[in-house]
Image (cartoon, rainbow, N blue to C red; front, side):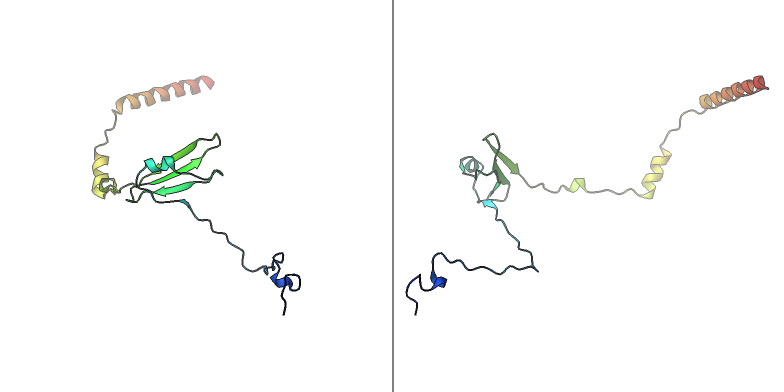
Length: 135
């Protein structure tokens, strides 16, 4: 039997076995979110956060908001509050029917066409005069 670290390298505090590398499956690293549940917004101001600039998440226990706190480059901390938006039934999409479109078309007022027709006649006369002068 081996009784000391010098005799058996597998029990030595300096021996670290090598893990076989997997070439077929990429290694994935999962990060957990930093933070904890809180009772009110005032608690976030006193909470310690990491100094590396990562974001800490503080969901309110009642589910009314999620508060984040992050250290900025100037040394101040930035607190952001995210609140859920309630779906408003009045903001639902309303589609136009054929009757709606026809009513809108009927209500379009066309300007008086007489002045436009007079301008077109005047332009035609001017073009004829110019063409006659060239001949």
